[in-house]
Length: 335
Image 1 (spheres, rainbow, N blue to C red):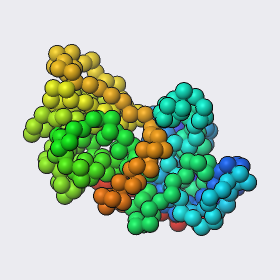
Image 2 (cartoon, rainbow, N blue to C red):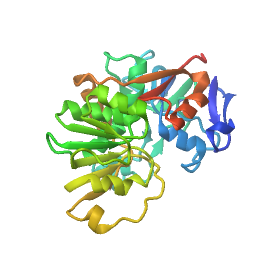
Image 3 (cartoon, one colour):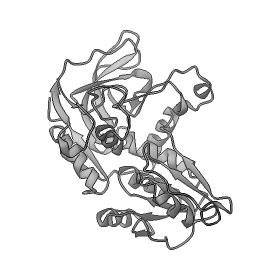
Image 4 (cartoon, one colour):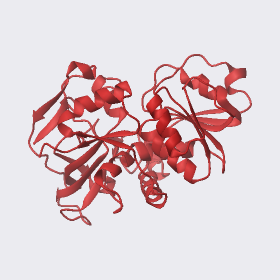
């Protein structure tokens, strides 16, 4: 099969993500073999490719927003049949026995593994996934619409819950890519007022089309104090900006796996009055199941831009440069 490989981490413009030939992977006893139909392009893929995240597997194949169909299974797998449509997401495996797993916080498992980082992901014709970590997908959405839900959507949902938005509250979203534009739809469906703060004119236009109350540059002040905010842009300089935009008792959740350095915070201006700063680490499978159910109930629609899988480097370059609003999705043209 053909697959994209990070031969050496470096700037995506340098051509270090290369198309290679590999054997079709053999699923482990508890794993599914999945023929990839579509794979979302996540900013985490860019971080893996460019080395912002340390290498966990030499020559890894990125991609962790996979929509595919079961093509085979290990001997211990039950409940799946060849041809079933499944989703493969970022969280690939946990130990299931540590204190975090036993208290329903498997996202904090110290032995967790991740698709497209610890194991080869969906920028390929085939991938594998432990059956217990595969998602059954709602019938009402096509592959292109589903792919971004599997990381951008799930992580945005967890970030929204971490931000403790009160009913009818005022939410600020810093950055407005694949994750934020799905998070905004959940918040709006639940009655929030949403203010988007992002650098791209196209992203601001999309935010207003989706129903945001305002859309401004990332460093501007929102039109009203915020009860909650989520930082999706991997820009540490925005942390104090977002904290200053919070009302008393407000919460800022930082959603990314990578963030540039945060400048010194001024306690009186940015943290006093019980403002809180929280991080978001991966997700649990329960988060994923809850979000996919809400996606169907609220009729969430990802704004997608299709790229052939053979043009994965171009999709990553366009993501890096902010050339589209919403989410890019690779459609398998290698088979």
